[in-house]
Length: 491
Figure (cartoon, rainbow, N blue to C red):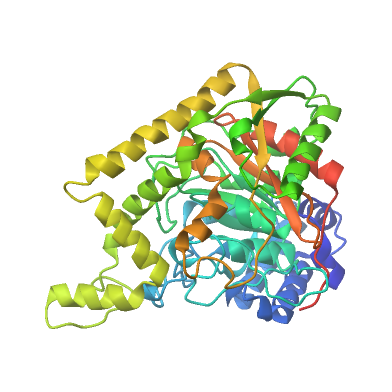
């Protein structure tokens, strides 16, 4: 049955429709794969009983011809999404054994469409990290390895569990979230496809908040088509989320295979960084050549405020995090460490419950919002954010359909290799991705090649607001030209 796990969502949908296998058989194959791959630490909670019950119910529906667009497809859920009666911790000790009495809007839409939940996936604590090393459940392991080496590599973050599980064929797709690159960077590190939708395209209701003006849910899948299928179910207006946009959800899958002839693709000169590895430069040129061969027109564009994006992001995101994380106080839910006063209870709980990276960001955020520093830091960062958004608007006003950039400045690195002595070294991984969140735009990362050590590298396409369809069309061109990569099995 193991070959059932190597199918794409599109292939599995066809197989289920043809009655070649049942959803229960598909689910059992994935549960067995998860059990055999516990060394990857991608799943932090397996829900086999619930998965089988969901699969049986879907099989009964399929038999009656009532299955939805995701009927019988087994998925993994990032531990940032509230799942009713299933533990949700954001991979932080401070949430303890929190079991939500409600379901996030995104996951409820997936279950509405017939998907099956295999369990909860590991992520950086409160989604704060670029390597999935800050989780209280320990780091996730990338299923890819350097050729001839047994070094344990990171899968990227914060959605490292999602990317690792999809790449290792443990689930057919996964939910993820992206605040500064947390979908696209792990996708690039694992040869999976990751989509960060336009801000407001997917509901944030029931997702543990990091930075409310930047967070956006999206899918990680094995192919561009699979990502489009998942995105259709995840997107949509939600009256419970005031930042959710009320506009119709297009058929994203219909964009796959559409001609890209005549589309203008912007190549931003500011993304050519000093000291950028030659193989990243080469990959970028190859990607541009593939799009040109498909009929797209390449144009040089300028995004002059890009150089300020990373510092501005690391002011805005921690500021919003310090505000959002104030609710974790040991009083209402989660961990409680007693103290002699209410103030001491807060201090003790937060000191023990939050990990180093979360504490660091909360302290930075509280500092930049404090009296005397608010104008100097937070207000200026918001002004820079407006200028970054304007740069993109000017590009799109000149007829540019999408912008092509590298997804990451390097391939995956080893666990413990970066950020130990200098956290900024880790933050620099987000250099190509944060602008998209600052401007609220959609972005997609697609596998495009490998480095000299056989590790996957990805390209990023940035689109106009609510024009994910163009990204799917262009992403498919890159995917077809580059081919698909699967890690050799060693776990």
